[in-house]
Amino acid sequence: QSALTQPASVSGSPGQSITISCTGTSSDVGSYNLVSWYQQHPGKAPKLIIYEGSKRPSGVSNRFSGSKSDNTASLTISGLQAEDEADYYCSSFARSSTWLFGGGTKLTVL
Amino acid sequence: QVQLRQSGPGLVRPSQTLSLTCAISGDSVSTNSAAWNWIRQSPSRGLEWLGRTYHRSAWYNDYAVSVRSRITINPDPSKNQVSLQLNSVTPEDTAMYYCARDGGSGLVDVWGQGTSVTVSS
Image 1: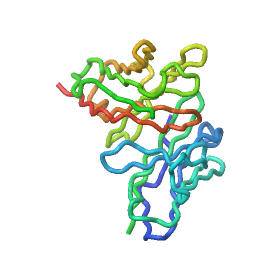
Image 2: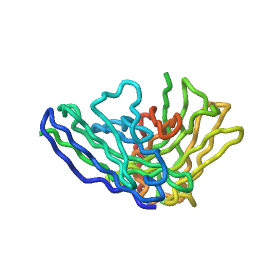
Image 3: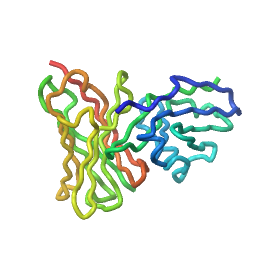
Image 4: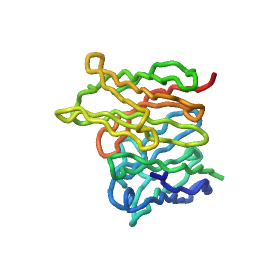
């Protein structure tokens, strides 16, 4: 099983919106509505920001939103803020009851 | 408030067994509504899901294909903890290891503090 594909880096200015893609296959992203997104700041454990494709855990800003089309999931961050600068990872349930992660995307707030 | 506290050695010799423990507070390892995962992270491999254990009238395990022949995840209800054993380690197993709770459908909302493990002679 291969990791999910994410862009290595994205950037945006404060107040702008950015979208991070996460491409899988019909055996994972395309088959299940079980995509999660994590935010990770340096030296910290990942923090869940989206689960089941588009749901936000309690306490997560509504500036974070998730969606999916076919084999590609997307994370959109609107109204970029300096504290959004971090690494972002997607994850998807896959056949044979396993979970896959993306390679991660480094978000730079200009 | 659910908390996960990891313990285990930070240095393992090549070909030996990596053993880590994750003590659970605020929840039960035997709950029918969560799964207990081990995940690792390294600069070369990024985040990698290793496996999980969960209880649904019986105990179940799922493991990543990449480590399936070398990994064992065991629940210990008497101590309310979960353990990870990874056999025959190589330097490629050097990573930060995390235990994490999945509250259902990928709701991995609680993480341990992480254990940095180096495989070296």
